[in-house]
Image 1: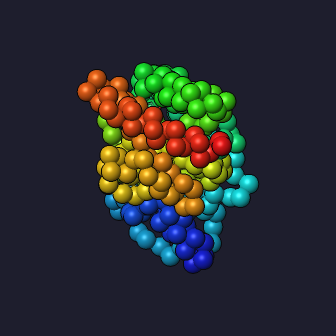
Image 2: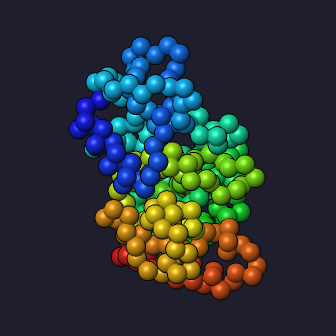
Length: 254
Ligand code: URA
């Protein structure tokens, strides 16, 4: 790998918000990519050799002709992090590949893990209702199939726990590519994990919601995660989420 390519990779990962890179243990036999730097867990006894100009083990930098199909193929039967061990199905994302609006959630739950589709459980039903109900009330002809829905991590975290920073970093490259391939007019970040992944801030949803933020040059509206809205004591938040959604829908579809 040349200095120039390495520099491009580093700025690619910096844009993703990745702060730590790890060197993976070299496979026992790997002629073609032997001694090239890799992203992965630190090797116990590896010797760092000077990089050679060989085939890169890293994913392409969102090539201009990137497609969701290609990204799905690159994910493959992913075992890049521990979440790959416990999942049933990878939940890549679903909806219109040319959507003008993309919703980003946290990660699959049990129902999503079973079906391989995002937001199909209780929170998903609420999200669908919110999208379609708000659009209908506002006179915007829109169904769930018109938008694109995906998550920060593509595999279900055990016990539905919050994804860990390294899981978000590793899976983040695919979210990055999905967003670059779709290039929507706006993104709606659902809850604090999506906020962290997209905006790189720990600022709470309550403070950020309702105001436009940016991911690269794409406007981002932050709102509450539908699971949060399902809790009976958060009914006020429901009204706020509806307001946020109204704003996004008018911005994108007027
Ligand atoms: N919660 C999420 O964040 N994503 C899903 O796909 C389902 C529930």
